[in-house]
Image (cartoon, rainbow, N blue to C red):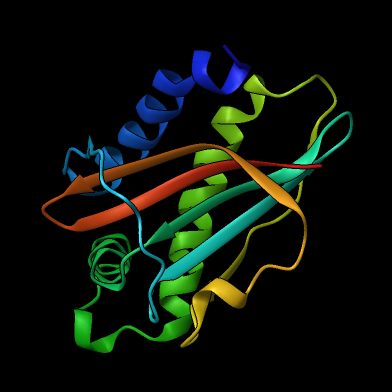
Length: 152
């Protein structure tokens, strides 16, 4: 059993609490195969020191729009692409900051880099990362995937 298996429940709890505080919506883990699609919002935070890798959050566009609307107290129709990427970057920053304790001491985290996925979302990563942990959460607002990846 790896550290990623041992701390799976902690990863779920941190993500659930972060989203609940922002939306009053409780997300439940689902055993669903995640599909990266055009228009999804993906945010990444790199970590480095003894390990190198990425915390990744990807969510459906409807989820990003709902969350941004709630966080920014703005009508959905008034949201910009920048609003969506800013909010999802902040969400991942909050989650990753709380999960940092699962990584080796002295691990450094980057600032989030957030994008709207293009037409071929599977071609957006060239680095050799292995996905150690993938959690899909769902609520009435939509779905998100949280991954912890390690560079080989």
